[in-house]
Picture 1: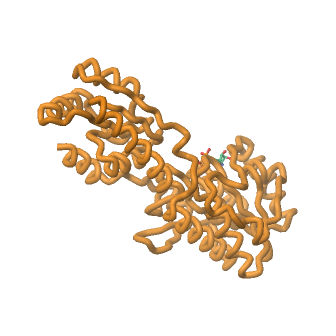
Picture 2 (picture 1 turned 45 degrees about the vertical axis):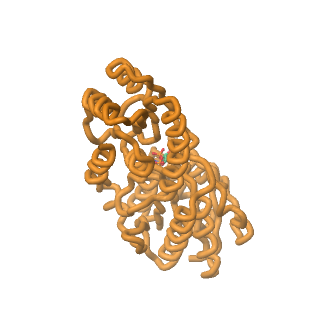
Length: 320
Ligand code: ADP
């Protein structure tokens, strides 16, 4: 391979820049040129191409977001759009593509591989951490730490005013972020979309906690499980305790990546470039127990990543 391309696509995640840096510098070390396309698949179709030299990725390791920008591309979901994309890649003599993104972006990458035999390598970038085949996807650790910082602050005010706080964190389809911050933030309860919950039971536990002398509580809610406002209203009505809600929202996507995410992203970016250049294709790279691994995209995209029920149980036990 003489030249490879890289995109960031779908939902942005802190650490995507470090992954781009990993791709670019690892490829250049093997004397392979790198180009980036702006705005994910959309920018391939519209030929928004930029040359990436070593200085192009200098100073970005600490920055959240993505210098290559990201977007969603409805055109690319259609075969005609993908045909156009492959044509642009081939016309620009781009011999392979590293796709950094979530499961939607990886599904797009698999289509390029399966429909056009075009060499692709996927890198899991998603704050949701819902991608199979890797213990962590890029951005999850930073998003969890951002949410945790907010929850720690909220707990201070919850304690002072002796209130129940319901904190809504990101996670439309899954509760990975919610569960992690519920544990690390010492929450009294967590609501996630995967597991049915009983608000009556939670209210009962809050009352029991109050009778043990606990004057304030934090309930973490994944956005896909319930709306914080509804939970707050229910708790207030049912227990008579003063309650407030806080929706953390998009702040969880931004910010400087943690050391963990930077190292993860650099390693994944570099191994993705190296494997692509070495002739592997149609894979996603990931980590398993700290070691770098790779899996066919077909496996990754047909496998579900489930929450650890022991962690859920631990939240309950720790709240006693
Ligand atoms: P994420 O990568 O964060 O999951 P999306 O699901 O929005 O984000 O996907 C990002 C982009 O990937 C979409 O805008 C689309 O261009 C492409 N994509 C998603 N799903 C498919 C699909 N089934 N086939 C082809 N391309 C897809």
